[in-house]
Length: 397
Image (cartoon, rainbow, N blue to C red; front, side, top):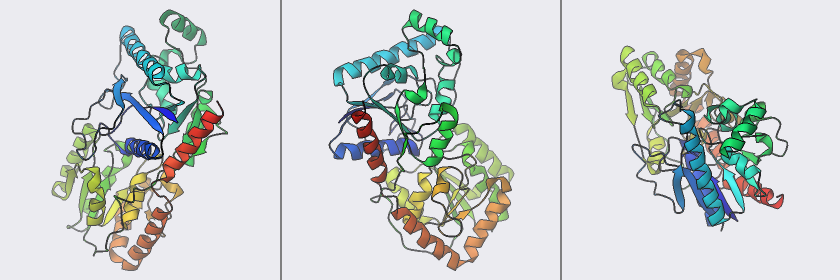
């Protein structure tokens, strides 16, 4: 099968784990004999991961509406330039490469007109959804936003510019979701998707293997995108409530503004010397999980899936998490993790960590449950689901 794989950020120029899941699926599907061409934006990370090589047949040509964690206002002529450029890029790849299927990956901040263009053709499409882009994508698309709910204006704009106006997104493509939680969230915005499938992401067994147990040393870890929704501040606020030797390592990249806020918070609380920020190549993350004592995942929002806790669990690392979103589908309080309500504040997080520190039997039980849980989600699980959904989309064209 020949797939045209389209999305907003592709490693090594990316910010978080969902782009890495995309890249892993592409590699797996290519190994199975599928031909995949990647078309993504011209975004360039300031510090791309040196452990990730550029993929073959990856075209960084599209333009999008996102810049530095914001969506700046653009004048109408600037929006039209973006749309016409993106339409030309898509048309060229469709004509030159002649794919059997177009797969939409992370499309937040992208031109929704691309989806509409393919929807009006005989070419099948599959949306692989790992975040809320179907819900917020039409709202941050600076071209489509003024046309929402105004079909007459949309028809006029399309006649004048040639840029397709987004119609019924639910019917524009087939759908597969990274979790049942994410499917339900998107259905609240686009409508019921009765034929949608689920493809859970799994753990790369080559990178994340069981590590030896070690004594508790109060080494706390957060790993992932730096974002206010992740609840990292709860880890910082919990430090004054814990023994003086407790330290928090924050591994990841993302919103530099929020990073500055976390540094300022640590200073205010008098724990700045106990908080450390790092950027670690992905091929070293397994070692990071093996070095520290516990992973903090106190997300405040409904995380679509949450692969990082599963990766830590595969190493045998205890996880203290909120269980919000997709991670709630595999986290089991007291059996493979400890689940803490982030609304209960830093004291609840500190209490859970203290409980872990003082109860070796609990830590061993959680470790055993975590390892067993991770085994249920092998690294080929996601690609299996995407492949089935893609084949069904092509068969039903």
